[in-house]
Image (cartoon, rainbow, N blue to C red; front, side, top):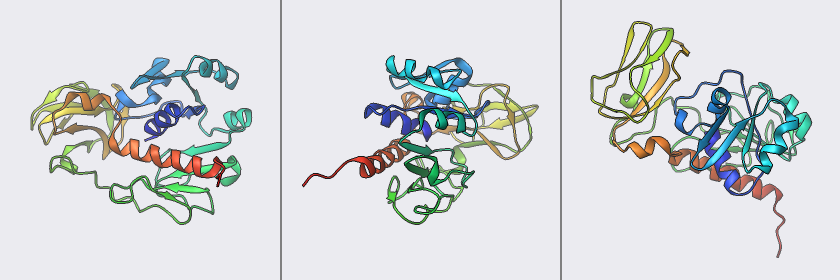
Length: 255
């Protein structure tokens, strides 16, 4: 979700800086800027993020037209340096890990765990449905259902999970076609088997330690390989909600 938001704000010509934990975990790695933490750079739909070692190097990436990303787990070092007008908490932890309205002039929280008007200024709805991407000026987002969105009639069936803790090793790559019953990956010696036919849309990085019941990938039953390399409709909608919120706060109305 964070990458979808960042991409949309960058396209709207905002100066964006991302902060990450030392070892971020993403399933949809082909469209996740956090991969720059491992690779140094990551391009998503024509927008490039670049890992920098210190806040002092942020402006150089902006001058190149890119998005700087720093390893700064709590974000304090970067916030102190930039003193941002707006801060977006896109951790998607389903709970507030410490973000407060004092962190910036305008603070936005994505999804459940935030209360608009109390710990953040605005909450953006992240649950699929009629209110997806809606800007909430008071109250909270809908509770997490734990149920993935339905694609071609498949919901939980398209999600790849492991019921064993261990080291993840992929047998397929993102974009590969699989059939129902295919072994997509293993966690130690435990096979991760696809329950549907389609294309592998997301997979963890090889060598990551997976937890029991952890989502390690997903299969798209639509079978369109190009969708594996583009931002999802959900992420774009949430990005639009964040953009609306920022403009709502900072644009001066002229009658």
